Figure 1 (spheres, one colour):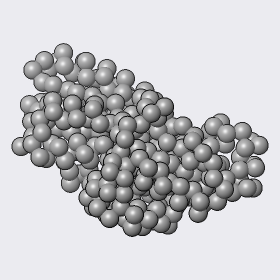
Figure 2 (tube, one colour; figure 1 turned 180 degrees about the vertical axis):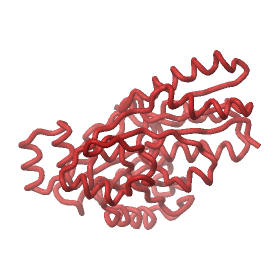
Figure 3 (cartoon, helix red, strand yellow; figure 1 turned 90 degrees about the vertical axis):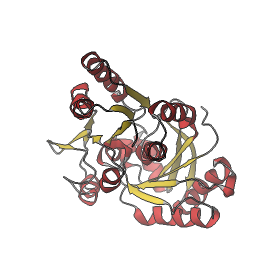
Figure 4 (cartoon, helix red, strand yellow; figure 1 turned 60 degrees about the vertical axis):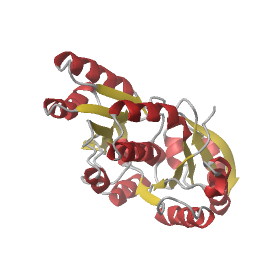
Length: 295
């Protein structure tokens, strides 16, 4: 049995049954939709279909991060069982949750000085963050210690590539990330921006493509360029999507065709309600291990 418990946040955008089956407790972010607060509980309280339908009809949800008290509620029962904790957080480039986790860690270690709590800033988001959690669970299940798992995560987390594109610019405009003119002309010209996560864990626009077909080909080409071993890549590949499963399935089919040595079929997940509050519907993200991310 491993000597630690692995935990994460809901923004890893992994299915509840996956986290439960891998014995990974998680803490939920929250969002407010049409005046009511909900937990970001992996589609349990509000289905992803309903959430993105309401956004497409004009709803503009707001989000709140996990605070120190919530981390303490998650972790204290584990510490009381005499177990140590390795927690992986959403990127500090997107949220202050890493700081909240570190605050909770300091408080609890004063109360449980014989225990260990390690907090890792994933510098990732959505199912890219989730892929890092999954790889940590693999190490744990293969007998890796907390120290060795922590060392691997810190050494390799910037090798976790995140490539995103969106076919719907409405949420980018509503959130102030693009101007009204950019939204209008981008929509008229069918422009799809391609973004990735940089070494600071921030989303950076990289290119713009006209038409969904072209950006789908380009995102797979980026995997060919950056994946460990190129098309001989034999690791895991995850995709997350917001109300555009067919686009995600098309990318998964291309990846499985061009990367025949994948460790498993591509896992397609839903972008959760907190990340999705910022992307809106129409976003697809591709995640894999490769060369180290730069600026």
